[in-house]
Amino acid sequence: MMNIQAIVEHALEEGYLTPAMEAEVGRICDSAAELSVEEYMALDHLMGALLAGEIVTVPRKQFINVMEELVISETISQITAIEVDTDIQLDVGDVAAYALNRLPPLYATTEEGASYQRDRAQKELQDLIAKQVQSAISQNMDRPEFFPERQALTKPGGEEVVKQVSTLLQAYAPQFETKHHPVGVN
Image (cartoon, rainbow, N blue to C red; front, side, top):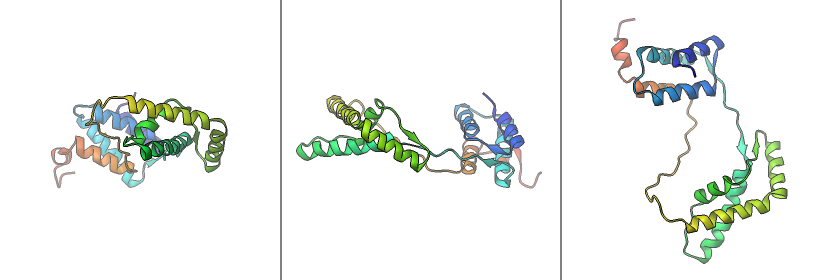
């Protein structure tokens, strides 16, 4: 486990900031009650290096779990059939999540890989997918309304690292610039 200064130093030496390094900086900032002056300065240095192009971000590898799209499709089909004949309302997300937790993931990083996983799943796993979705629907229909005030997850936007670091700096060091770098003093 590295501290912010070590992460920034490593990023400067290597010339890049990996997703893991970015996540660790975020974790440290989120868990700290207050950052030290050194940590603020390291974040400021990181921000400057990113803006100047001294450090580049390493893009996250893009991948998908093909099982998600297959389960969502099956869930919508089964829920639609139930909702047409009854006044029962089911949440697609709740049902799909329950089923997905009981099915193997099918990750792919290319279109060809996704096609292969889709074909394989439709041949070998379609019955299992349908059964797990049915089980999820039954479970969902039988459960009591525990927390009606539950907040659904929201998908984070595709924010750039520079914006994230800037937001972190603003959140954790709103007075840093005025306290430690008075205007006109270098």
